[in-house]
Length: 403
Image (cartoon, rainbow, N blue to C red; front, side, top):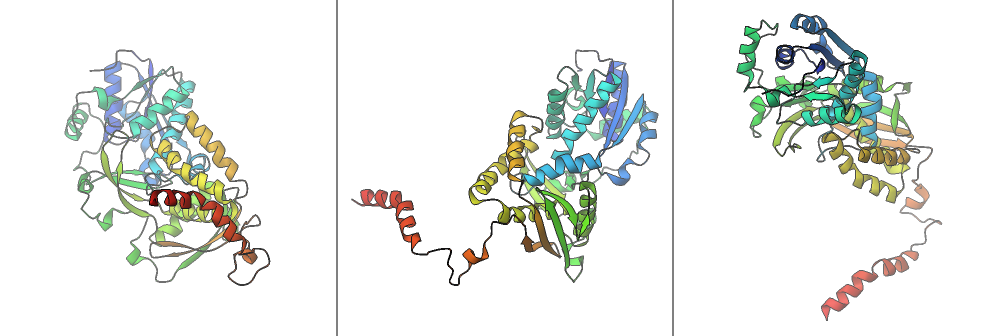
């Protein structure tokens, strides 16, 4: 079964692995049209080696490999940090944040190439199909979308390997990895395979960005992060752009065993999925940023923002980066960040990221008022009247019910 339309040119989200290599050939054979392969460099490192030639050898008319690391850090990771976007209170959204950026870049390539369709290799069970396609629909609503896993007859990896052999597709055919992996500047995710039993402990050899806490240095590492309006702009006195911040924090956090999480999350399609993540630099940023907010944002604004954080994370996870709700939430978040400027000192030690100090020229913390010693700014007798008024509904309700 295939789509009923006849595309003239397709832009494919391409990684060079078995799935997208087979998809590239399958698209050409099925639709008899030109296929442009697109890969976004969002921090995959060595995974991009030889990718352009591989795409050409597989039959792509062109291969685009765009370096989007700085844009990813500046326009996607940092806004997520500002909004304390943590899905189900634990997942820091590394994969979720990369997909709308890739969709945006693919739309730009499609416009340049005058392509009339997009294709991706996401399965019909996962979240990424939604994230990619909502991005396409928001930014290029007139172009068609092809999702091979939802329309072809292949049932799994064995079928793909056989198709690759029949069509002489240049992909390594080997024993399936014991898990699937997605890497970018924000994190590495591991899912499937041996991890599908949520009681199985991940093997230490699996981790790539972090050492185990047991093997981390025996002496703590101290770092100081400088923020301006909610964005980290320097570390240890050195000014850095967002990409440099992420590179530095990923390295120092990884050496100290920081950023591992093992969770069972609720996918958008309703399936529970076990995921193991390494998010070293992102973990430090979240902790430092939230701590700086504690002295620079007033109580009620902070509580409203914290209440919105879950919805913000949910919208990102579910692929609504370009939606109207996200625009409204980001406008509110941006407004709250004007005074989130200052420095946060952290101690990194064997998997722990501990805040040991914070300061800001906009700090709302008043030591003279907070002291347990005698002060002239706060009259403790005033608290009695406050509690009487604040507790009036509780008192009157109790009186009536006790009758």
